[in-house]
Amino acid sequence: MPERLTSIARLVVTAMAAYVIALVLLDTRAPTLAPLTAMLVVQVSFFRTLKHAGGRIVSVAAGVLVSVVMSGLFGLSWWSLGLSVAVALSLGHLLKLREHLLEVPISAMLILQFGTGPAAADRIVETLIGAAVGLVTVFVATPARLRPAERAIADFGGRVAGLLDDMAAGLAAEPGPEAVARWTDQARRLTAEIHRVEAAVDTADETARLRGGAGSGHSRALREALDTLERAIPTVRGLARSISDRTGLRMWEPEVRERLAGVLHDLAQTTRDYAEAATTCCPEEAERLTGELDRSLAEGRRLRGELGAVLRNDPGHWHLHGELLVHLDRLLDGLRDGQGPVAYRRTRPMVSRAAGRADRVRARATLRV
Image (cartoon, rainbow, N blue to C red; front, side, top):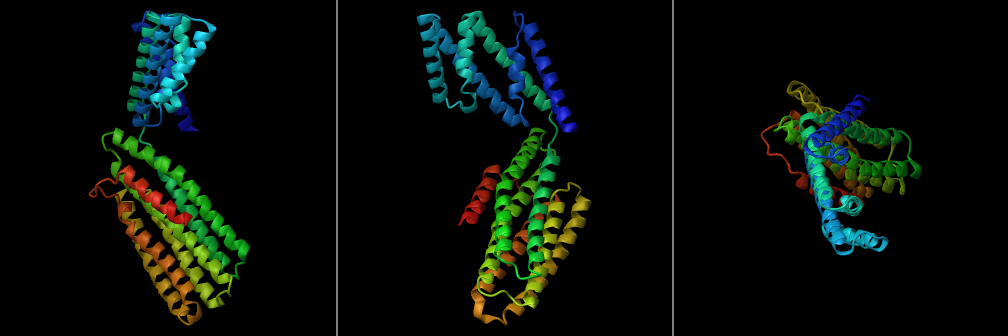
């Protein structure tokens, strides 16, 4: 609720400032285009706002150009209006304006209505004033949006851990096809959820860069934690598939199920520890949480070793057991390799968003196999 009130207040102040500035600078009675542009270009980060403002300025200029040419050649009539809209839309597609496409014919129609000359110039100037006010507002009033990214990663890590706990609890009895199908479906939903988390981390990255690097170390840790958690999803889904393959033959003995459940419970706790450590910006707290994470990883390794020793007593299904142990090793190794960023490191160069997205694309491709 406080964030919504802050956003409303920021838009109100932005619109009022753009209107007053345009009223002072232009000889026009009601410069409503300036506050409209200012509100439209204000996005969650400076870089998105800059991109949005640039697209809007280009679309308005293109619309004004179309209106000037068409009014000079044909004047205003029903058929010239339709022709102007067609030309404006074609020009918008040619300029690849995408979400700003309709602003080209809208600008052209408004200028055709009020006449070219001063109206066209005023419309361009109002757009520039509104875009400038929107950029200044974002630069001055946009906070570093690290908290939403922290919450998104903590929630996502909790959901991954919850799935592992659910699988461990299901192994207390012999899980049927319904339970295994539910685990696989939960893993698919996690894959869809990652896009929301990625958007939150992108915003945190951009606002940190906007403020001259303040919080950039923490935002880097959040991004690397996101990559680590996303790479865990195909492995969790592979675990569910391995258990499904085994249930199609004959389920493990109670001792094996108990040991496997113990490993999964430990992995769930390790994942929670990892997500909690990755979402703290306090070095002392991160150090404490990293120590807990190390202990959880060591316990997971011990339990995994005991499980492997027990599975060797059932050599008839070594290929299934090998696949299961490989998935467990991947989860443990992934959390171990990803625990470096949780200590709020500043020494490693920032991973670019393009590289991070490339890793995530590879993870999603693995998940679809």
